[in-house]
Amino acid sequence: MTITASSPVILQILPALEQGGVERGTLEMASAITQAGGTALVMSAGGRLVPALERLGARHLALPGCGRKNPVSILRNAGTLARFIRQNKVALVHARSRAPAWVARLACRRTGTPFVTTWHGVHANNFPGKRHYNAVLASGDRVIAISQHIGQRLAQDYHVGPDRLRVIPRGADITQFSPEAVTGQRVHRLGEAWDVPAGVPVILMPGRLTEWKGQRFLLDALALVKNTTPRTPWVCVFAGSCPPGNAYGEALVTHARTLGLTEQVRFAGHCQDMPAAMALAALVVIPSLRPEPFGRVVVEAQAMCRPVIVTAHGAALETVQHGMTGLSIPPGDVQALADAVASILHATPQALSTMGDAARMTVLAHYTTHAMQQATLSVYDELLGTSLHKNQDALFQDTSIAG
Image 1 (spheres, rainbow, N blue to C red):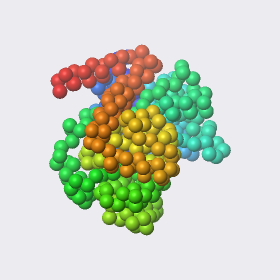
Image 2: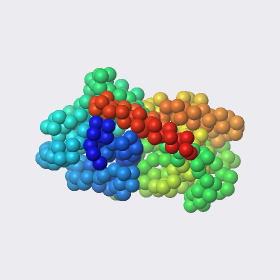
Image 3: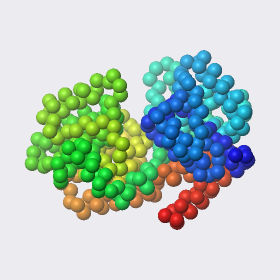
Image 4: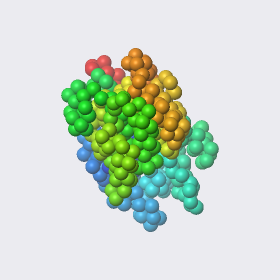
């Protein structure tokens, strides 16, 4: 492909292509860049999502040790990236994690290449030197925050001004996360796999098994629900993988047994079909004990018209309007969570439908993958003088009409 101002080469860099929000965002932007007529490159140490990336028309560049934090590796990788930028006429580099961002910052300074960063995570300043290490994600020519919550932190703690700061929320793929897109067969198959009795409401908690996500918190609340309304049937499915060598998953199983919840709780592991999981659910609970930088699963559940219960901090305060598009409760308040779960289980179908419809409308208005892609392409256009966002939007509109 001939490289021109209207078809720039854009490189994203991250530690690896395994699974997670950073990786999904990378693939979504690779797709958008390609659709807009640009050349999408991704540099990482590799991973299981490389074939999916390449199916989108992007090219993967293997850089072993891309996520290593030691200065020697960073300097060596920066030299490799600088050479690649020159050889391949890379127009812009977009870094999505701290160690790769240090690599990209050094390489972009050497080559005079525009540098964009996205702050995806929590990244606490909890020991000496951490603030300086984190600050690289606030040093881009443009700095993307994935929520207003993160944007406020960047402005307050890292003094990123409005000239560089761009708040671009993550989004739900509304073609996949749509009630009309999920067949009854998919839902039935998942219900059988999870041993859910017919007609029994499913409480779904998606997310990897780690303490701050709040699985134990939810178990304690479910014990209260069971004790106060023993005749109300329900099953709770924890859909998420457990990090290797982490004893937290076993501790949760033991805790559920201690609370007398063994018959009503399922630890399902990683779920490959989250749209079907949410279609099966009567409600989706995201009871994080720490503020979520964004929490994409919240808007995915809302896109499926499902009532959500979240803890009232972080970006959940932006994505959930209490009583209208979901319910929010104080972090760590077991009784409040139990009351919220019970209120959804006992709500009328009309009330649940009203809440679900309002939630999906909010997602369509503010939190779609296409909106995220368009806003990010506009950031690239600011720095490059291109019209990538117009090109991709024209293709999107043509595809929508054809569909």
